[in-house]
Structure formats: C-alpha cells, structure tokens
Length: 215
Image (spheres, rainbow, N blue to C red):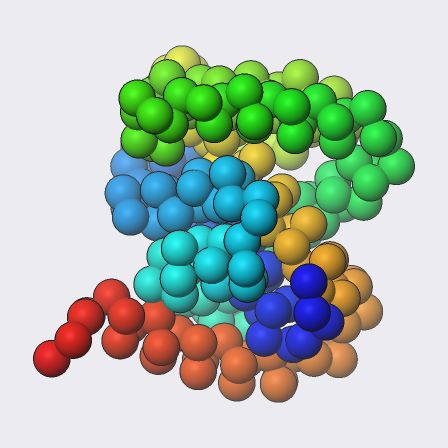
C-alpha cells in the first residue's frame, strides 16, 4: 500500500464508518444498508488494487468520511466522542494483533472460509454476519481489553444486533490495518490534522458525486 495521506484518510474513514455503524446499531437498532455492506465487503477485499477499491469505491465510504470530518470539526459532541473512542480502541487492538501471528492467521482463515458463502448470500446476510462476529469474538476479543460498546440494553442483548456490532468492529479493525499499511501512526493523527481534513472533504465531495451517479 502506497504511503500517502489520501490512503491514510481512506483507512481512517473506514474505521470511523465502522464505528458509526456500531453506534447507530447499539443505540438505534438500525444502520445504513449501503454503508454496512461496504464495510463488511471490505473484509473480503484482500486483493484490492487501491485503498478506495477496498470499499468498492468512494461512494461506499461516504458515511465514514462524514464521520471523520465531524470528529475533526465537532469533537465535543456525544456521538462523535463515542465513535472516536471506538476508533482509538481499534487502533490499540490492531497494534496488539500485530504481535500475535496466530490470531492474524485465524482471522484470515475465518474470512476466507466465510467468503465461500458469498456465492449464496450478500455480505450483510445474517448468516455471514454471525460468521464474522464469531471471528471477532474468538480472534480479537481474546486480545483484551474488550471494546466496551454502550447502547440500549435491549438492543445489545439481541443476538443478531450483537453480531452486527461485532462484525462492524471487525470491519473497523480491517480499516485500521489499511491505515497503518498506508503509513498511519498515532502521532500523525495530530500533525496531519489540518491537511487530513482538507483531503477528507475533497474525498467526500467525490464520494457524493459517485453516489449521485451521472447527470
């Protein structure tokens, strides 16, 4: 992966998209279908030609770019603080995962096995979601400490919704790996803040044009 600010913003946008999905599922019991599909689909894009191709194009990353821009411009809002906490936790987990090769192997193996089901189901089908959630539970949660997800108790206790949250977190982890592969480091989150915001805004404009389609 080429070390460019644009690629780092895309990776970080993917982490914010996954974290935003976690927040909306946990508190509201709903999610944007297209964004959820793009995030889960990124888990299977292991040979993508570019960072944006991981999400099927920038249109698939619109929610994440919006969330990233909010984090850089409205950091005090409750929802923004919560999604940022998830992103920071995912970055910590990615660092731990990098030191445990057997867990990396287990994740890749689990995703490859799950990928075979895509011949029969969409990435957001509940059967796929539960398989991805189990990968996260066994290969990521065990690294500790677990990410504390806050939300409505009835939603968090629902097996399908809990699986969607874990699957989204796994997608967020994949994005933090992409961010690091593009040269992402925690100190860069500070020094690249202003330029990163400019890049995120430009990418969001492109994403909106892709979403709108041809005139």
